[in-house]
Image (cartoon, rainbow, N blue to C red; front, top):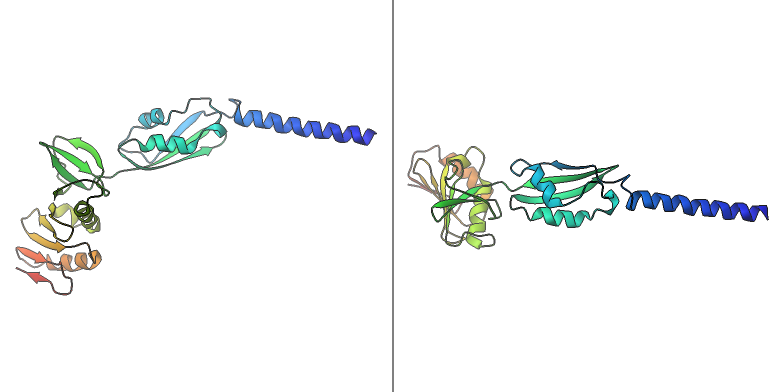
Length: 222
């Protein structure tokens, strides 16, 4: 009989421990959010990210819906991706990858900065001189000509990209570059970007007005 009571007592004790633990983790502020730590942000203020995250101090950390918080933060225009995780006992960690502008699109007397996906990150009155001007018929994310032009920009090496003044793409197959010194590069379509870059870097050492690398196997210089 004593064995039965002892087993019953241990079972109730175990249930009690589980209940207290569950209460501490899911309902109590003991393991609540004490800090929202933002990592990886440069352009977006950490306070703005915390406000958009909308996680109140003291809220049980285990009860935070990290997927919902991520979706809210993705609504910030300058954020490309975000991962939210729990750092016990009381820290919510927000890791940000910001959108990096790679080109400028003229827009009604002002300039829209766009990232590699064609997403506008901000509007400025003056174009940053380090970024090339993108000239396409429909400058927007998902537009084929825009996508190819941005892919070309992304393929350029760090020592060549700042020398490009404009990237023109009347169509996805007719991309061209205008360098800041006035020289022209006929790029063509989006095929074989590595070969085109390698050949172009060599060709630019020769004085000319136009460099045609649209067909890497048969290049021309004029």
